[in-house]
Amino acid sequence: MSFFAKLAHQISANVGDAPSRTFLVSALRAKDVDEFVESVRGYQIKFMQLDRGPFVAEALQTQLSGVLLSAAQYGRSLVHSGGPPSRKITFAIGTTRLPALWQGREFGPNDLLICPPGVEIDLVTKAGYGVATASFPLELVKATIDSLGLVSIAHGSTSSIVGLKHQAHVIRDVFGAIFDEAVARPYTERAATWALSKQEDLLRLLLSCTDEPASKVKLVSNSERARVLKAALATINDRPGEALALGDLCRIARASERTLNYAFMERFGLSPALYVKAWRLNGAHRDLSDEHEPSMKIADIANKWGFWHLGQFAKDYRRWFSELPSDTYRRKHSTNAQHSTIGLS
Image (cartoon, rainbow, N blue to C red; front, side, top):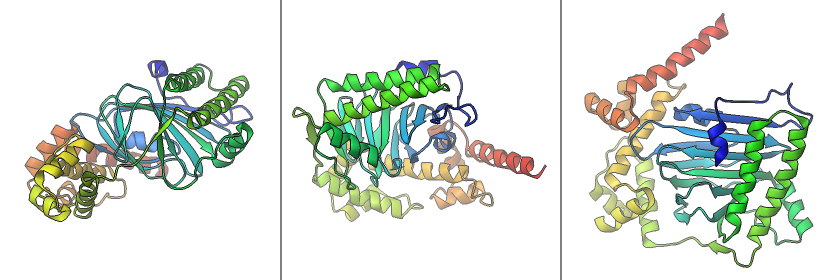
């Protein structure tokens, strides 16, 4: 999408400058995962980095009359987890040609994802992946469905992926028009009026796509690999400090090495052993960045995640995140110290 090329700096409309129907626009380029997570509105999101290199991402969001529109593009391969905006129905569509996996199902560039409230985010994306999302209040969605005479969208906790034919590029064009206009003129009453109209158009378009006879809902696959992967991931999550061997995971998941390896490669593009290592490194990264862990030393955090040789830990960590553990720790805690000093002065 072209609007990312226009982001020279972060912008944000102050309430005093915003029109009467508060129209908020924010843009972000982040080279730190914590900065990105803290700056994104509405979402309770976490990331696990699946490939080597510095984290980099950019996002653009608009908020008007309870509707939150977001677009993001990521420079690393990631596992996304957490939750979408509460009390809203969220629609998502890819903005790049790269496919993704949503809860183990293929989520392609010509698919529309629909997430009712309460859905847990489970998205695996490749480096360079982009996505646009629109989160609408439940009452607005219901009223629009009734006005259009469409079949109601289920409000349960199950998401759905709808395969589209020709509507995908139209949806991306509408997103692009809204964001391009928001970057160009984010503060005026006229811009808010125009954005409100385009939001209504977007919601009607999204709902009409779900009602198209040609649309195809992709169902969840309850395969043996899904069962094996679920059991293995539960074990990994329950034992953060253990460098679990392939044999351990096979025994616990009651699966052959071949089946387990295929399951991990299919979902994450990593072998089980490399996934376990990446998961532990990401856990250490979160703790090193955690402002609630000021008393924990780097060695304590490394040991917590099963890294007992500090020299090897530093080497592996730098290879994965392109910085030393001490760099991550110092950046976060020096920032907190500055904030504390400012608050006391």
